[in-house]
Length: 361
Image (cartoon, rainbow, N blue to C red):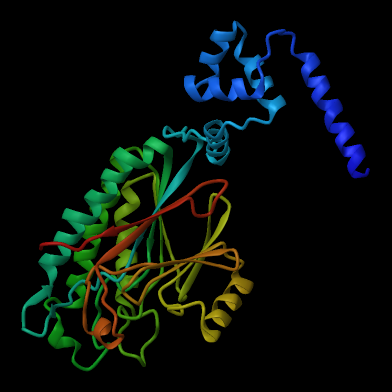
């Protein structure tokens, strides 16, 4: 199509537009521009000529008169994002979920002092953090928050090891303890049973899975079964016999595998701190290949962490002691934290909540 043909087509389109306009009093372009400039709006001009606003728009289009305000308004409207409504009230999961509580690295019996000689961890601080902070926070979350989004049908407690501080783990350990291992075990048992009884009172079945830590063991040359964590689990197994809906199982090995809602869980006390190093990646991939786990939970390092590793979830539980000589040697601060998380039929890890135990003692 050449220029002459374009001109003819433009003329034809103008004629069609004019024919569509039924009004007989269409003003000239100059008059229309003058009226628009004086009256400001097409509605006002339409009243003068006794036509509807649509006719004024057709006249403007016919004469090529552009309304800047209208174009800008249309442009801004086009830029606006679509408005979405967020559902703030979630429906409870009809199949329910499992609440999983990870407990580990309590180091009951240990006494920690800072560089000024101030005691920052001992038996009283341990009991305060467990009875006044950790357990009330867990029960409050369970009663007031978690159940609003999903129904908790059961609770699983994971005991990750180093519950008792043990003895003879390092040469000067005896100077950093205030109670001997047998009393460490009794202290841990009483604290754990307080939580179990509170959960049972809420009508929840409780399953406990446990692995031993490195601090619970006796001398290095002795049998691995000579472990104070193992003694704790044996006493707990006897203590829960009076509760028909409470079970406890622990491993004689350094790891344990079990299922929660069909998902494969793997727990152990020690695993690599990181999964993005060559050595750490090799370890986790090897264990994932051997045990086919969906979630691995471990402790030992005293600071918590949560990562996604080749489709599996990796949870590193925290500690109750907080900062200590291990943290200083690793050049890492470690606030006292214990993890709780959820498991549903659809997701091996449905939520995670670090319970922070830091604060005025």
